[in-house]
Image 1 (cartoon, rainbow over the protein chains, first blue to last red):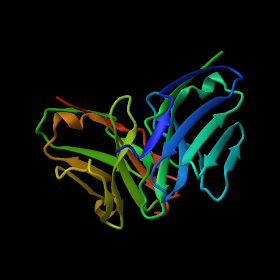
Image 2 (tube, rainbow over the protein chains, first blue to last red):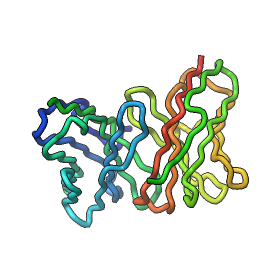
Image 3 (spheres, rainbow over the protein chains, first blue to last red):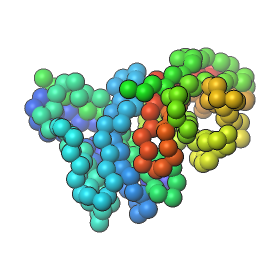
Length: 112
Length: 115
């Protein structure tokens, strides 16, 4: 059972555009939603995370939008740069446990 | 930033053999994790470990798997015996705290190939 769904599987945007990556989840006890990026041959690294005390979290060009009612959250990358090209994973975890469930990943390519 | 080290970076073994993957977590971290990533797919949680004990494990953490961290040395994942479907990249992670929102730092992974 896939508890965290992610789309699209791959995404290509032009440099300067906003890339939008989407995730949804099923378990209403999930209370922490991080996004990781992973460059080829490297380990995942935390990019930005949100807890649903708010609907939006910004960090520079990266913004998470969270919709608790629809159980959806998205990552917006504004002014996309070629260096943003990587695979992005969303994840979710519950306050009743410590382990994170990961989405299937979105491979983002930013074309100059 | 804090670094998690993993040894070896690659391991090739024959099916049925035993393998031990080693992780050197961030020095003051207390919680340790193993994840499995098959090429091109998402990471999947295997197990987490605190104070000498397994705290949680997923269905992927088969009976052939075991973890330990003897006397503060490497945090290890042992697979005995290995199977073809164990071929994957195994990532170790560590966190200072065990809360569900505690940031986990990942190592570079060990690519395991079972022939």
